[in-house]
Image (spheres, rainbow, N blue to C red):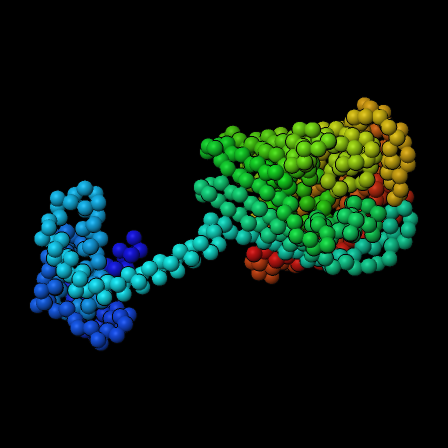
Length: 532
């Protein structure tokens, strides 16, 4: 197709009456002639030449020039030999097509003889023309092979944050103020094969964690209640923590699958305003972003069913390490979490009811994604396998374009799945050795409510406040917590432009680790986010 187009393009221009009638100094004609090497050495083909009439006859008889209803070859000026050779090549291709398709009876011997004579006389020009097109086709093929996929786009987010904590560390040790400046980057390569599906592969790097894999903020304060929403990865090592593929099977049913890094947030809606739940542009704290129930996952599959335009049901199963078929790993032999989530969307807001069931092998217990006390995350310690059931509710409502409210809460049932002595958090930065029996249980609850004000102070800005009660073990056969912690947070996202935002934030934790003997802790952060 490329050859046919390039060979015939000059001839197509010259068949237009307006161009044929134009004087020779017309810019379009000059530019075409200027492409011919040593054109001054070539003699033009005039309308009175035998070759001109012969080619005109072939063009009109075999319709070599597409785009004109009568397939005529009109004009009243001379052609350069280069332009004339393009016309010969077009007729050669057309007649070859007729012969190849079995319609060779339409091509008579006399016309073939005329075409052969034309080809012989203009052999030099045809060779030059084909050589140039071959080079152009080779260059085009190289560009197509080396170009980045036209079906893949890059979405990226880079977060930098300057943060510090104030107040005595849990357990009574004095806190030495020390500012941290860290970063996290996510590069999402998103591809679509049908226009409706989406494959996402993520590259991630960051240095918010210490070399031992613990949060810098949590290490400084002695509790995970002070953690930032984006404190993942360490040492700026680049990893591929997330692979997700979404595809619909009908207008109402779609699936999500992925071998790694698929969380509940990747298979369902957290039913929190997007401006609040975004790591780089929403609430800075880990606990304050959305319901801790959704902070679990691994690899597996989920189905979303649009029951109607307002009601969506999500069913999902995610294994901790489905790619490791070793003991206490694999798709069905290790830790896992299963979710059922029903969401109703109204005109001004949404409401969701979720149920999650999970199992955590010993040494991998983390019921609430590190958002609360050490005891609430691991009520029987790290030596006891634990099953859990969580019921959560979450929703939001927009009273006006500049004021919205959101809230969520949940209740946890945890059960010990084996017996043994385990190190249980004592709420003051240490642990106590306690004996746990198979069948022991613990219950915890949590909740939060927040208000935010989109576009107040400028387009894209977002002030907000949040009050919450981090997960608290209210009942247990092993150890329960006597006090409630309180989380109070304020932030202001300042939108510099469509790609950059700066968010100063401050929150205080009263009764850290759900123990009133611990002094209040304060966390300050200035987060800068680059989205592109």
